[in-house]
Length: 563
Ligand code: GLC
Image 1 (cartoon, rainbow, N blue to C red):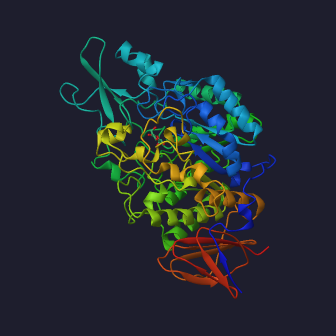
Image 2 (cartoon, rainbow, N blue to C red; image 1 turned 180 degrees about the vertical axis):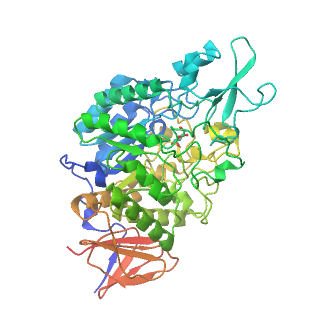
Image 3 (cartoon, rainbow, N blue to C red; image 1 turned 90 degrees about the vertical axis):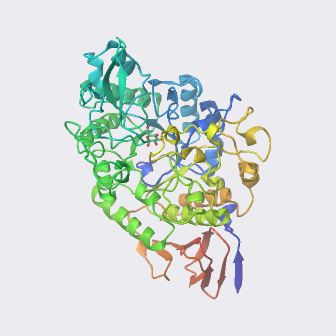
């Protein structure tokens, strides 16, 4: 008998509304964590900018989607030189996002719905408007507050050259010279990112004290964990040595740099872990640590340090069976000795959305400026998501990917806000394209994002991708995500464990078993025949089954259960 299955055409589609699992220990080992970018999620007051009350109003959507936790990008008081990753007051909510009472209400409501809340902590640098930095500049050379940052005299006859040759991740020198209180050009300060983001000096005890106190502040507010921004950057090599080369950005992520991934950072996290463990409730840390290898990333998640680290090697892998298998194996192998779960991620607020990455030829990196073949990109993105959600460990989903949103590649220059765009030559620069406010409704003001437009313009046709347009539509990307997340809850072999059993598969195809669960991902350009491994659970595209064999089209992932 031949049977046609529509995408996501399993009984799970009907059971899309996930039930909230009872809290259990180590929830994070196989959790699906949804990243909310507060500026662009939901705007409750019609000022064109998303806010905490907007997030709170949409929590039921996230519960129904079936995620376990929500990570919120920074919403603290900030001049927004880098969209909130430049924090002026770590214990205050920026008025554009609301206030502390809104944060409290959001945390409480989330907990009532069975969702956990992870907040973003930015310890590598503050805003140049942080009180410590403002005073450090205002008080002039010799101010004790300068020791909390990296102030140095310049080189050259009149101190007109930067203290060393480090370059900013966003392009240009990593040093800016201040004007001293008497009006003369004075010392320089270090900023690995924008000049508005001076790096803290983590050798100074006040810095550590302050961050331990900030941790407690948010733990007392009830948060379930922290995403640590630039977790690999806190400690700099002694003496801030020159790198001796230009074009340093090419080295990033491939080499240990004197400003990244220094062994000293681990001591900071050991101390933080002790604080976290004083609190009840199984709370976690996740590191944003761009290191040269997954093996070095594993050092951040040793048992007495952090719980998870983003797997950027996976994010950077092309849609290619061989490369994917290599990175999956290497990830699982490096996490096993430290006992931490692997994590998987395809998109976030710093990279071109995976629907657009996969629409373009491989090898273009994560800041892509061309739309590519959108249908191809979406097909692959759906398949890549099902593959990711079939792997053991925890997975991260970035807001809007469940709608299959592409990057907005044609934003006019005058609306762009990414500071890296304006510095040129930097690593990033096209991050606004993944930050466009998401569509909730087919039509209406900013497609349901808010009542007053949106801080970045939404493209025409955005409404067709909205939550409203996709809800209950069989085969829609939103229903595919819901079905997949629901299946993760009902199939014990999904998510758990630390290994996959690879099955023989044609070239371009990944096939693996995990207990009673089998996943086949065809990354090639042609349909392939594989055994129909059991009862069809879910597929990212149209598949045909006949006489125990399945025909899996190009760029399609299938899940079966033998149970
Ligand atoms: C992290 C953030 C990014 C920010 C940078 C500087 O990489 O994810 O958005 O620009 O840190 O804080």
